[in-house]
Image (cartoon, rainbow, N blue to C red):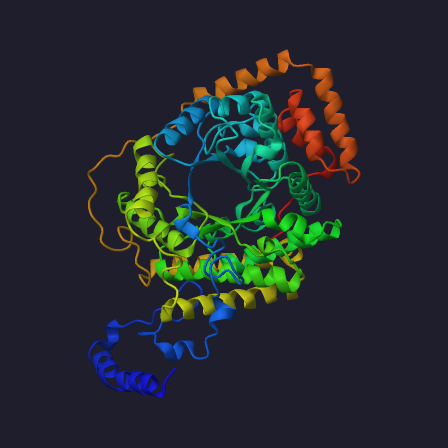
Length: 553
């Protein structure tokens, strides 16, 4: 920075700025981002003194990948527009998928209902009242066949948000693809399979941490060899942010969890460059546009350095932070729901400017119900307008060089590194989660955020400011209770027509193999092919491993 620039900024601070502040001082609050980064009035070259362009930015497709993982980014191909959908049963969800594909969606994303996520069949007493409510019910291979009816699995990329039962659901997907004549090496997509974030933020776990980590690594190992174009894990900061974390905590805890998976895989004797190129990530996009852009850029740089320096990766693809983004469900309001269209647009723009590889935009009515067709169409059109009309995708990393964005990128990265160091001192990601350290950090952040809203320090339009009397009625999509009855009836009929002796033999084999160190995914594939259900396989493992009990107080 030149002496002239420094003198000019100091003169401005001591002159025009100081006089203006004195006039309106009571009305000029301190501005601090979610990551506790204080925002200055103005950013100049002084804030980037000694900035190392090659070391901190480089070029798209080149280390440290701050500016993107592909040399052409969106000039080559736009991000995948992947709307998350799952509702009621497989028939209704299949109809929604066909509708979205017709409207121009370029990737499918499956939302499973709570029983499926928890390894419970629809006729399990614990499933009562939850079947098909927050996603699609998938009990058996028949449900998976119906779900992807008329959808060629060699032509679409499919994402499945499933964790504790990820191996079982992917096994079903592989079998259905095979029935279509599609071999595993032709399949493209992602299975979330990130069990650590379930313990610290979401709660949809089944088994204790150690066997759960084994299943996660089994799937990573299996797909790296047999389903090479598949992303076997989507290491998720999204749910960490939804639980109330800051932007810096989101990427810090995500990176800590990612490091734990890499360590677990290398302990199996698998070289890092054999599996790391297919690791993927999942982040949240919140309302602070520039903080979010800086967060995505900081995350890319942080991952590249972690893989190169700590894990000694040599393949550049192992250092690529490829990530999916979803707009923030926690920011949607039931008050004045059309305001959510604006929120989602800002968040989606942040993801695009930050270089996401795929994107889901929430529907404006999701604070009220499952998305209606009208609302989900608006959400998809939001992405299309940004991608094809806004110009945001015309050049790579368009905000690079902004004094503010570069400074914020540095500060979020530094804040994340500090948090990661705290996780290390707590014994690493797994130990920090088991001891409740990560959960407490997230809870404290969520509490601070809520207090700021209640005190009016943070404005939520239509909630704590700018109220209106609402007269407009919105169509609410609800799930007919008959869906659960029909699903249970189909499951009963399915069990009656299968060879139950063969199924039992598979379940016994799964129990036996789970006592050793065999990879469980091939066993799941053979079991579901012969009709074993999600709940039956999960219960076979429960009988040996038990269930996890959250000890955090």
